[in-house]
Image 1 (cartoon, one colour):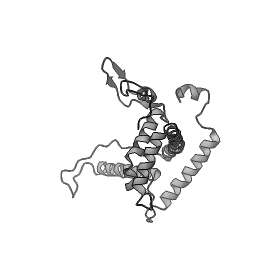
Image 2 (cartoon, helix red, strand yellow):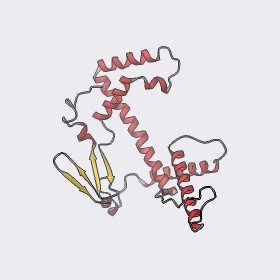
Image 3 (tube, helix red, strand yellow):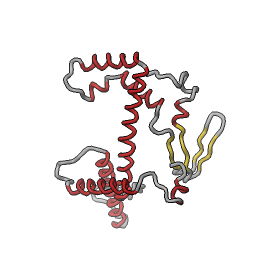
Image 4 (cartoon, one colour):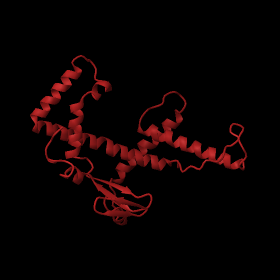
Amino acid sequence: MLLPKVAKLFGLTLLAQNVTDYFTDICTKIIAERRASKGTGNKRYDFLQLLLDANDKNNETEDNNDLISETNGQKSELDTDARPIQTHNKSMSDAEMIAQCVVFFMAGYETTATTISYAAYLLAKNPESQERLFEESKRIFESKSDIDYDAIERLEYLNGVVMETLRLYPPALVLTREASVDTVLAGDEETIKLFKGDIFQVPIYVLHMDRQYFDDPYAFKP
């Protein structure tokens, strides 16, 4: 959303409330199930578990710092030169984790489907590229009954097709970021000063179509 403050003023949202409630309910239940099954050996390895593990680690760090503070600076039996370690780690609330999960849903499903659709379109428009990709796939998988990650990593032309598809049709046209500190972006001819809290955008599509970086930016060249 390009103007979040204006949207908030008029009560506009990116997603309908019933959609937000649906995903919030799903994520809340999954988080509760993960916490209940902690230590049972049924650990999942996905983005949500990554958030939960990072959150637990930050909580442990905060608890350790509190313990050091409560000892009034007394030295530890394990390290007689130990001193309190200052850390800026911040644990995430459930609401923040749920918000991240919704982003995962939006950025993970729709963008993937869109990229695959554009890749199929580009291959249909460029039959020579389609044939080369077919021959590479046939060569890599002719001696394999199953497709595994090791084999996929050898598909160099497929990687080129995906990268070129993302260049020509990026799912996100811009990246929006917030400056965490005052800084200066130095360019070849001018500089841009950003202050903490400033919102700025990186024009991905414009960069991908810039002849300064790509000689023939509108051509499909895996």
